[in-house]
Image 1 (cartoon, rainbow, N blue to C red):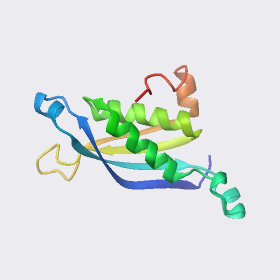
Image 2 (image 1 turned 90 degrees about the vertical axis):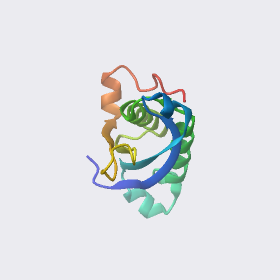
Image 3 (image 1 turned 45 degrees about the horizontal axis):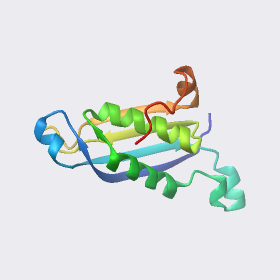
Image 4 (image 1 turned 180 degrees about the vertical axis):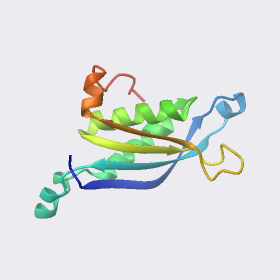
Length: 133
């Protein structure tokens, strides 16, 4: 298990998300936090982005995926996004938090945290399934 991590924190993206009819007609913000294990030693030595996880490219993919999605549940959004990132960026392990702020009165946020990796995807027969967004 690699101790180093690359992260993206507080990435706000607008999307269609929710189970109620009125939620299907508007765009709401979700906030994405992502943590990915990697070996930063090679990148530290080379000082080259090609030797690490490119958080700019990953961030752009997150934005494109989430903006194009129309899930009912944050659970579905988080699962499909995590599987897509693992497959497309060859990420060995990640922790993804999807926060639907304002979904519960009195709470700063609600949502889900999922952890995914190559071994979990392989055990389910691949990670590309359903990642077309």
